[in-house]
Amino acid sequence: MEQLMLGDITVDVVQKDIKNVHLSVYPPTGRVRIAAPLRMNLDTIRIYAISKLSWIKQQQTKFREQPRETPREYLNKEGHYYLGKRYLLTIIERDAPPQIKLRHSTIELYVRPDTEAQKRKDILESWYRERLKELAPSIIEKWEDKMSVSLNEFQVKKMKTKWGTCNCDAKNMLGNYLWSISQIRCSMI
Image 1: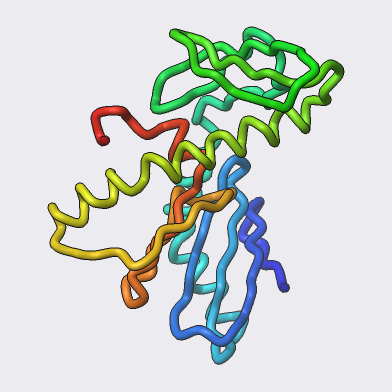
Image 2: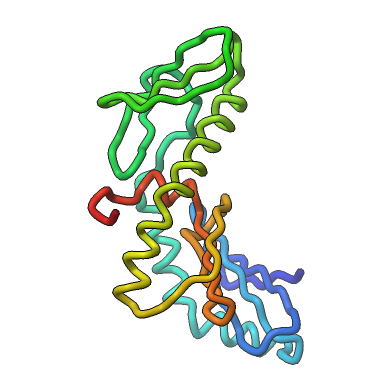
């Protein structure tokens, strides 16, 4: 991987066997990456990046101005989202297998005594994944009818920068369970 400097902006350049140039600005810091065809030389890529400089700066500014959530610690009274609604996490220690119950305005996380934060996180993420797998078929069916399309396969995966992806040729869809289940609105179902 090579890097270009455009003033105070560093651009990571990856050349690979592709047809078109792909420019991306990634949250939360506004890291810039260009994927370019092997046939393009670095000077051409630099000129392309310079032509997109105002867009790059606009995206970086947008990311910097976005409110950021503090990192989750998986402690009592911490806010977590499910179906677009904020719930307070309640940790209940007991000597039994992990379990999660949704109560009025709380997510009750039942764990063994002295369960570490990473394990609590894993349990909650697994629960989110299972909820999306339960909710997705009815949402997909609704939109298949409205759009006159059909889906062969739906998978759930944790992704850092996307809500999901779709392969139109194979009719496959991949959903990001962390974003989807925490933000999806009940009205969509």
